[in-house]
Amino acid sequence: AQSVTQLDSQVPVFEEAPVELRCNYSSSVSVYLFWYVQYPNQGLQLLLKYLSGSTLVKGINGFEAEFNKSQTSFHLRKPSVHISDTAEYFCAVRAQGGSEKLVFGKGTKLTVNP
Amino acid sequence: GAGVSQSPSNKVTEKGKDVELRCDPISGHTALYWYRQRLGQGLEFLIYFQGNSAPDKSGLPSDRFSAERTGESVSTLTIQRTQQEDSAVYLCASSLVWSGRDVESFGQGTRLTVV
Image (cartoon, rainbow over the protein chains, first blue to last red):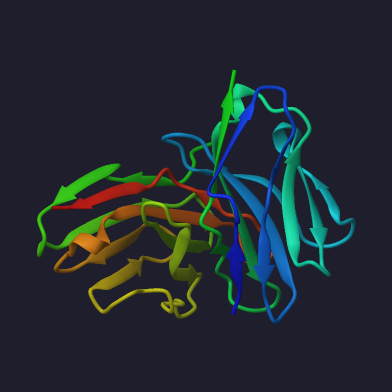
């Protein structure tokens, strides 16, 4: 079975500041890793995914994440946030070659203040 | 093109009543998923349909929950004898095929409130 831990339930930052949203996972098998964003009153949207290859993954809206297998982490970063980045961010994993379901973390609410 | 469509967007029901939630996946998508998002929680997997294969029902929380899918089209999630703990946003997602590498498209969800 897999589990995902997002250590920070809320992260407030000022506009143009850098941000890191932390994600750690646990799994007995190799996994694929995902970050989703949910804007207020909208559905989930994929930000980026790690399937294989380079451990640094670039996504939409200037976000990137780095897969660290030894630390079982997949932290999300952005060097300079905008007010429009205010949203809830979910980290998720899916077992390779196993169950098709995504296992999600509880989410991190990012609030960007002017 | 049209995305995943869910209806109703909001549903308020009395405890003990049955409810039916509908999901229209993207045309041609063979895989369909239902997830539940309770307040302050991440998404919990409920059920997965892939083509004509037997669905993976391992996430359904109780026998009050059931889901059907007709071919590769519409799916309905039914909750019988609703309880207050069933209050949540129910999200549907679909994808073209499953390989672990495909990414689901999510609907905007049905917010269910049991009073």
